[in-house]
Image (cartoon, rainbow, N blue to C red; front, side, top):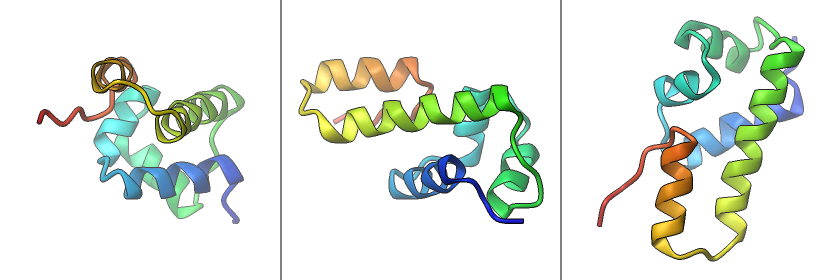
Length: 87
């Protein structure tokens, strides 16, 4: 089974930003094993979960593209359930 483009993007973003499966699963409100199956291509996300995946990928891409203040970036990351690194 081939992975959908949003799932492929999510895998790449998760690995690039060193986000754990647990962090992503919590944001998507799914079990970690479900996320692992999507990443392996042994299961396909529902339409509702695919929308959540697209939303999360969009948030990550927004953070990558825009040069926001670190305060704003941390706020968005926190709201998205992403790991926020303190400096």
